[in-house]
Image (cartoon, rainbow, N blue to C red):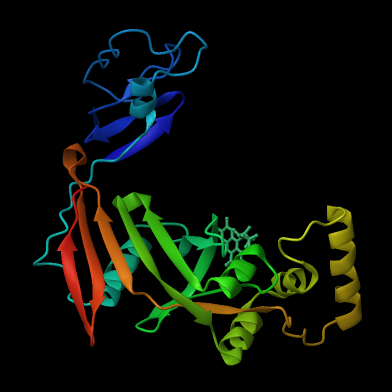
Length: 267
Ligand SMILES: Cc1cc2nc3c(=O)[nH]c(=O)nc-3n(C[C@H](O)[C@H](O)[C@H](O)COP(=O)(O)O)c2cc1C
């Protein structure tokens, strides 16, 4: 079972048979054997200006058909436990960076922004990531300390959404993390005024070279403007891709004093 976007051809295959693909050009025959060429979408595939018709564009979106159910009776009562199971599955499935996550923040006047970060640890206290305290995300979190995360594990057809308040991680966590990083990464973090406009890449590289010279082989300082953040999860949603786009979604929300309510959402 696999999905692919290969040489101008997007589609879904199960056991070598194409289910819902569409050829994007005639030069690229479908890369599968035996099942015959799929029928072309009725009518022209492009608009007068050459852009894809909406229907054709939709079919270009390759989605793998996994069909793994996410059932209430199988889900853990605690979403951190459920997350741990799915995270381990993502590692086993060979996701290159299962800890990569989109982090959404918002400015005080509710303008959203989103970017990728790496979650370095998670437990019942929350999800920890590290960043520069002068960055856009940090400025937004200082003014509006709430955020949302979304993990996407393509190999499993799964998505997990998490949201909640964000607080600084401890200085010890930051120090331990910084010390665990390769020396070159530590130098880059020391040199980079993240999210600020800079004159040139050359100027940044010059700064790194100066730091390298100044510290030699000695221990590098922990950057004073670097640190961890902990998102204390209050809501989770686990999304499992299913056949025919009738996906499973289970949401967890905190119920005081210390429980979780699980609800099924329509896909
Ligand atoms: C896969 C991936 C992982 C990243 N991990 C981090 C991270 O852990 N911390 C970080 O500050 N930036 C990370 N970045 C860079 C951010 O996406 C972003 O460019 C940077 O933090 C500045 O964002 P901001 O201007 O919105 O604050 C990562 C980027 C990618 C593509």
